[in-house]
Image: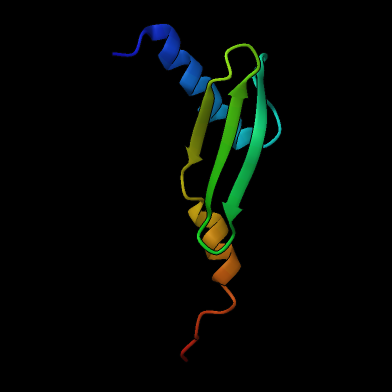
Length: 77
């Protein structure tokens, strides 16, 4: 079971995955990956002291996806 501190740690990393480049103290970004066609994105973080690796998945950015396909949808009059 996760403790309150662990939950807070993971919540902070999840929040950082939306900040794209801002990392909590003691952590580094290993990789940011995204798919512009689907709006999917994930960030891999590593703890500098323990070596722990956490992968944080962002929610799909539906507004981004729609904006990318808005002008490619067929229009019917």
